[in-house]
Length: 195
Image (cartoon, rainbow, N blue to C red):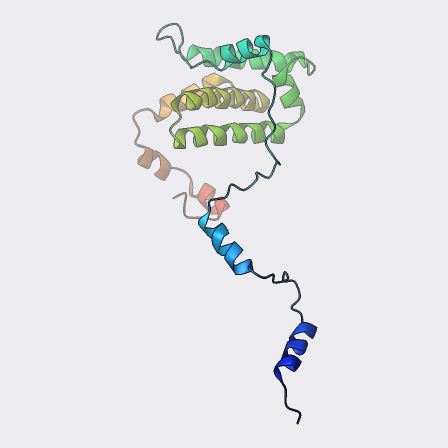
């Protein structure tokens, strides 16, 4: 058996190179230690920040008008606006003008798309409520109610039907109402979480 000398060991180490690791350079540990002590700002995934031009004055004015803080007048608005909104959405459905009506365009895409859009708006509302953003929660709630009206129109449900159901439930404990649901619903769902 041949005796391995120090130069032979060095030559063997040179021949066996680890796969996938960077080459070691003198002073690499020192550089890593210095980098660990410094707080280095990493570049954002979008690349370096680029200064953008200020938007034109007309755009800034429009944004200020649209995005101004929400100020709700204490009078003049009530739940009747939901009936009026339903009527407007129904008129748009009957007109079928998908070129100029968001409601008509949405319903033309089918019930699944109408329901998906409602779900998206509901999630946005929940997010704003969860983070405590009151003004945004009000705005998102309006979006949810609008898309709920679109669902009703698409399904052929009149607001009076929903109001009647709410009136029927008035004065009934939520626990009692939930317990009165048919067992068939719970069996169909395949869970006892609804019980």
